[in-house]
Image 1 (cartoon, rainbow, N blue to C red):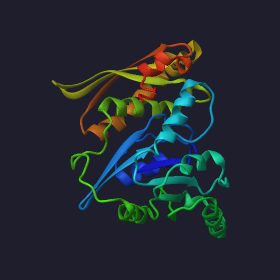
Image 2 (image 1 turned 30 degrees about the vertical axis):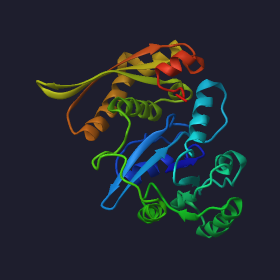
Image 3 (image 1 turned 90 degrees about the vertical axis):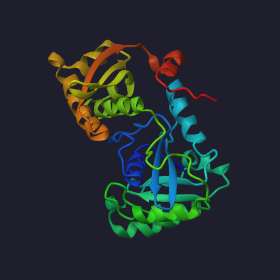
Image 4 (image 1 turned 90 degrees about the horizontal axis):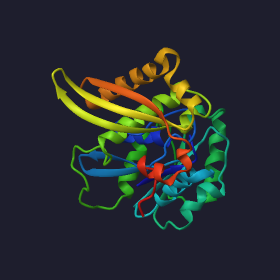
Length: 291
C-alpha cells in the first residue's frame, strides 16, 4: 500500500510509526523524501508492505520531475492508497493531490494527520466533510503520527482492507532497501536538520564502503557528501571541520541504534556542479526511474 500527499504532511513519520522502525528520514522542512521507500510491518496474521513517497508538488528540474513521477507511480500495482493530509495546515483538496487518485480503482483512505495541532477542535468536523466531498474515499481517518493517536486503529483498518496473499518478504524484514540506502538517508537527515537555506536540498550522499570489522568490533562506513557549489561545501565542513563533525556525530548515534553495533563513520565533501540537472549524476546517486 502507498502513502501519498503534499510535502510535510507527515508521510515519513507515519511510515516509521506504523512499521515501528525509523526507516524514512524526518525533517520539519518540506520535500525531504526523494525516493520510493518501502517499509514492512509483520503482524501475527498479516504482512503489510508500505511505500513512502516524495511529496506531491510541482518543481523545476530533473530531480523535481523524478520526485513527482515517483509519487505518481506509487499508486500503480498496490492494493490500497492512503492520502496523508496535514489537518493543521488549513489547505483543502486540490488537483495536485487528487490527480494520482483519478486512475486508481482500489480503495483510498484519507488520513487526516497532525490532529493534535488542530485548534479549535471544532474545526475537525468541517474538515472531514470537505475531504469527504472531494473524492470517494473508503475511509476518512483522523490520526497523529507524531503522538501515535489512532495509529493502531488505522493499522487495523488497513489490515481489514488488504486482500489475502502469501507474504512477499521474510518475517524479520523491515524494508527491501539495502543498508547503504539507510546510511545515506540518515546522513542526509542530519544535514537537513543542521544546515539552512538551499544547502540541504543541494546534497546527495553516496556510501563508498560499509564493512563489519572485528578488531575492534564495529561497522566501518565511508561516505561522500556531494554539493553543487564551493560555498555549500564550506558551510557543510564548517570552521575547522566543526559542522561536518556535528553531522557525523548525530548520524553515528542513530546508525548505532539502527544497526545495534558501534559505528565508525568517515565523511568527506565534494562538489559536483549542478548535479540535480545532470542525468548521469542523478543515475549515479539513484534518482532516475528505471522503467
